[in-house]
Amino acid sequence: MKRKHSILIAIGFTAFLTASLVVARPAALVSQSISSRKSAGHLVVHEWGTFTSIAGHDGEEIEWRPLNGSSDLPSFVYDLTALSGAGLRSGQRCIKCNLEALVRMETPVIYFYADRETSVSVRVQITKGKITEWYPQARMIYGSTPSDGIDWGRITVLPGAEESYPIESKPSHYYPARETDAAPLRVCTVKGEQREKFLFYRGVGTFDQPLKAKFDNGTIVVRNTAADAIPQLIVFENRGGQIGYQVRGSLKRKASIDRPSVGQTQAALEAELEAMLVGQGLYEKEALAMIKTWRDSWFEEGLRVFYIVPRKVTDSILPLTVEPQPIETSRVLVGRIEIITPEIEKEIETTLSDSSRDLNDVAEEIMRKHGRFAEPVLKDLLEKTGDTELRARIQKVINYAGSNPR
Image 1 (cartoon, rainbow, N blue to C red):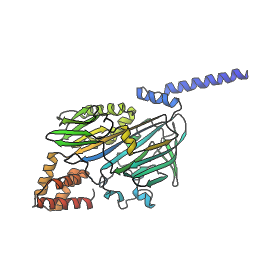
Image 2 (tube, rainbow, N blue to C red):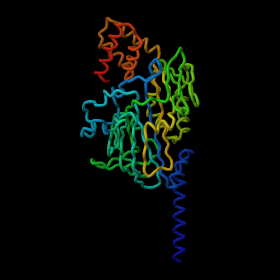
Image 3 (tube, helix red, strand yellow):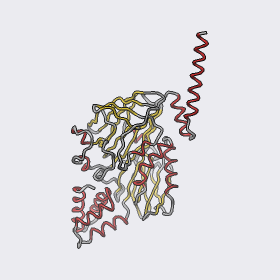
Image 4 (spheres, rainbow, N blue to C red):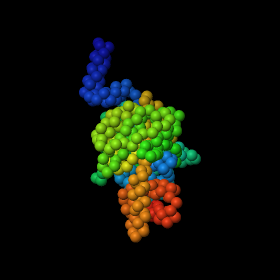
């Protein structure tokens, strides 16, 4: 009787689990995949982020100050001021603004999926770089030559827990990353318990990008310097609000791509990007969250190349350690290369050549129109021009831009 009772309980419990899974299973195939993995009791880790660089006229990356500008990150996000014991950001002197680098590592976020409460430890290193912002609070931000890194110590994955995260009224690129099926996380810090949907970090680097790109007589020449093929790339341009793009598949070595003809739709481009990100291992909601996060920046005025960073390159630049080891780890980093067009150079050169205007007013106009990319464009012009007077004006504007972050 006792055995029969135990069997009935087991059958009832199994039926309950089955029913729960059926009710909870989303319609999308990607979400079905998530549910099946979670029901197996496995830890799954997914990550996405962006490497942004600026190509000079020779195709090599230009050194710039990628964080020398306004930030829309919420005030609860930690940055380098926290290392001095300040804790939360509080309007102090911008320590990170004058960091010069080749690459801006934008918003990598790490998601976790599990079927039960799980304790994990997480650490990320950055080769030839520095971590500049992060949330939740880390156990340690460390540095050594040639690597820097971040260690969150032990965090708790809480599938099904109430989602209660910090939020502020001002808009931010930070929040769309929460729009996924990932499990909530709990991090216990010296300042108390913190909750978030992901682990967030950001940084700058001096590492070489695996793809080089330059503008050459109306075409974009791209060159893969990595051992593995670039899985996919997109050449995109927004000219006066009109957009055009070209999608290319695997790139093993080198290719010349015509400058895109404008007249295409952003919706079609976003569908291409979503398919590309999902094809590399992200879940659909993760891909959509990434696109939503960077929609206004990725598709702004200018010519740029987006590409999938080969996984081996990602792992060499950003070694990730998660314990216990996940059954699946997907890391999808998108490289973004800004290409300086002849039109931008001509516009800035014309503005600089007007000696009747106050140079500070000229600098303000250039910075307002070109934002954080103004200084690297000016540096590229400085290298190319032989006009002594123009070189002097360019250098003064560069100095002004460096001392007046926007």
